[in-house]
Length: 483
Image 1 (cartoon, helix red, strand yellow):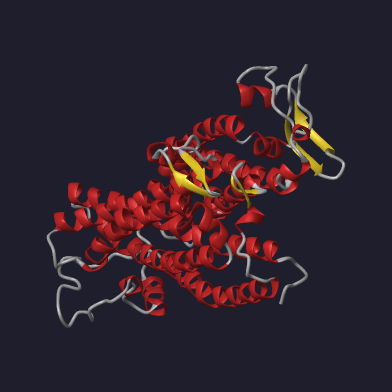
Image 2 (tube, rainbow, N blue to C red; image 1 turned 60 degrees about the vertical axis):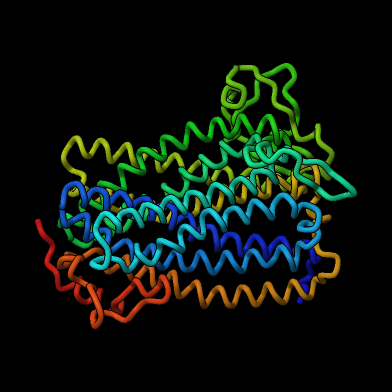
């Protein structure tokens, strides 16, 4: 079952596979939780039933994403004890408490108010329900805070000492607020909001293309595109500062991102748009770049010096082609997001936002790009950190469990792929069917589901989706679009 790979290679693939599945669900639930809080706040202020009906619709998709995020996160965490026990032994006194703080401050907060948020309509007052929704949204952001703090410490470790080969905390303030944390937290927060806003806008675009012009679809499309405008433009600024931080603290990663082999001692560094990095020849087989722009972006001067990959030992360099191209996928999609939002702004001024079918197709295609850019960004940051699991302190190979074998990891990897394909494939399919059904006008939510006999007492987040998807879709198809 080793698939011709070493235990280290298979363990890295397994963790990459499980974390890639996991990250898309928390990113969705973080953005949607805040979107739901905004919708409920707008409803409380205006009493416009459109906001209430949108809340009722998007909370179902949130519930599915939240449930799958919890399940995939638990599976991922077990690997710290199975495949990466040496990393846990050496660095566990840092990463363990940080993850514990996430559970105590965020997960408990979410769990405490999630039931009221999902099933509290008509059972608590509107203000109490909004408070529960707000607490769930705050909880998702706190969870992101601690996870990013832990991961950022692995990228730019500070505030620790090494005693008898074990990393021990020396300054928790420096550990939590390590040098890269503020930039990476802001970058991930903007990415989560982009993921959810593109999902909302893409869903509305689908229904606009199908002929719907009712207020539910228009409001979703408008709100989603406003958030894309804000977060995509903000992400450009955050990304610039994050790049400067990476240049200072992780120069080998930055050089790999730019495909930059030789330190530019006496000339400006170009910005490479295209290149074929060759790690054996320590050069790019082909490249297309813009003169001076690399130095300008990275140092804010026309002739700024940037350390090249050749200044680092070959064993200390990340996989350059992977990092180079994953970064360009992320940035390229980010530029398309900016273009989407600016185009929407122009169409708003012309009064053609809801009638331009070509733009609706553009928004529909852009719907899933938030997930692609998110994954590309995590590939960039995690592969770029290699060969270190804690940058400059612990090599990845030294974090691997001593007793684990290639056959064991290979077998568990195959099991993971098969189980994930069934479980999460079904969940994603269910979410897509909910998206296809679309939001619907409904009765008053305070009387709906108001007591015994209306629905059985739910025991889990997925119970929030309270009707068969085929029935919801059939009912939606019977509705005539409102002009």
